[in-house]
Amino acid sequence: QAVLTQPSSLSASPGASASLTCTLRSGINVGTYRIYWYQQKPGSPPQYLLNYKSDSDKQQGSGVPSRFSGSKDASANAGILLISGLQSEDEADYYCMIWHSSAWVFGGGTKLTVL
Amino acid sequence: QVQLQQSGPGLVKPSQTLSLTCAISGDSVSSNSVAWNWIRQSPSRGLEWLGRTYHRSKWYNEYAVSVKSRITINPDTSKNQVSLQLNSVTPEDTALYYCAREYVALDDWGQGTLVTVSS
Image (cartoon, rainbow over all chains, first blue to last red):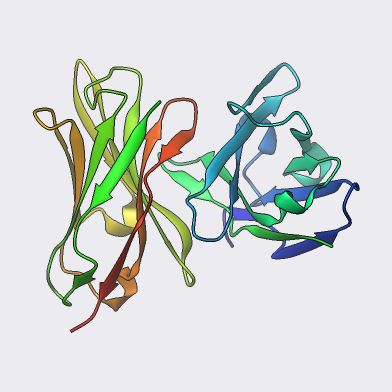
């Protein structure tokens, strides 16, 4: 079982909100991890968005709009990237990442379609 | 503003060594507050962290278990760059390779180098 699992795709309408999940493998407690989020558009490297550990311990990437935010769902053992006020330019692949067992580990990514 | 410029061959033969360089501008490879990472991306393996080097009074290296026996990441302080060597490559090493600067996260990325392993 992968360390981080993301839905392969998600669709949402312009102006709506999208909630992207990153589920940690059973036995790995989301509460102890800082979750990092990246956006990748075709032909470009991943771009850092933000990280989230708790409501009092989070950081927004430089220049990243506030409509991108992070949270956790402890009951689902998952990190969440919430994108509000969706715009066409938000259509991209989104990856989560954690530092686990002395390595950076990435999720498989979610392709977000805005239509 | 930090910029990372990658260079190296795009085609490597099986069993040979993959060598890439990441030239750093806007920061120092010897900085005590950052680390320099290599990551690769392929359709079959997704984003895969390979390893990193960093300086904290002395140099440290950390490598992914999957490539630990084949990988070397070296800083070059005279040229302010970091290099990746991956030995004994196979077609499974075909991927887009990135270097990345780690400060808060993997904050800044190189442009990527597509490396194909083929005879």
